[in-house]
Amino acid sequence: MIQNKIYTVIGHKGHGKTTLTEKLAILTDKPTIIADPRFQYKPNDRRIFFKNPNEFIYFINNNYLTFKRAKLELVVNCNLDNFEDLGKYVYKMKNVCFVIDEIDMFFDTRSTPKNIVNQLVQYGRHSQIDLITTSRRPANISRNLTALTDIFLFSRLREPNDKKYIKDSIGQEYVKTVENLDKFSFLQVDIEEEETKIIKTTERDLKILS
Image (tube, rainbow, N blue to C red):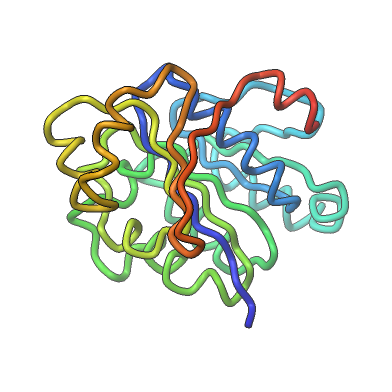
C-alpha cells in the first residue's frame, strides 16, 4: 500500500519548530515545498524563494525535473487569499514533502471538508505526499488533521488549554512531560509505532544532514 507520513509540530515561538521542520523535511528525502506565510525560512544552497504561489507554479511548470532530481526546497510566501492555489497545485504532485508553517491560519476548527488541506490530509497518501505542519497553539488546529497525524512533536506547553489538548489528544500521562520540556526539546509521539521519546534539535543537525 502506498503511504505517506503526517507530522504535526506544536510549540511556542522561539522553541525550535522551524529548525525541527527543516530537519524532518531533509529526512523525508523528497523534494519539498514550504508554505511560509511569516518568512520563517532562511536561504541555503537547496532553497529557491517565491513571492507568491503564481511564481512557484510558473517555476515548476518549467523546471519540474530539476526540482525532482535535485530535491530542491521551494519556499513560497502565501496568505489566506492565495494559499489554496498553492495547496491545489501540490495536491496534483507525487512523492513530495509539503511543509505548512502556521497551519491554523489555513486549516482551523472552522474549516470545511472541501478545504484543500483536508484533501491533502485525507488523500495525500495516494500520491505519497508527506505533510509537516506547525502551530503555536494546538486548540486552533482542525481535528481532521490531528486525527490522522502519524507523528506528533510537542515543545514545552504550559497554558491550561494547551495542557488539556495534550490530555485529550495523547493522554494525561504526557501532560507533565510536555510541561517540563527544555527549550529546543520535543516530545515525539509516534502513533502507529506506539513509541514516545524526547528529541532535541539544533542548527548543527542541519549542517550534518545537508
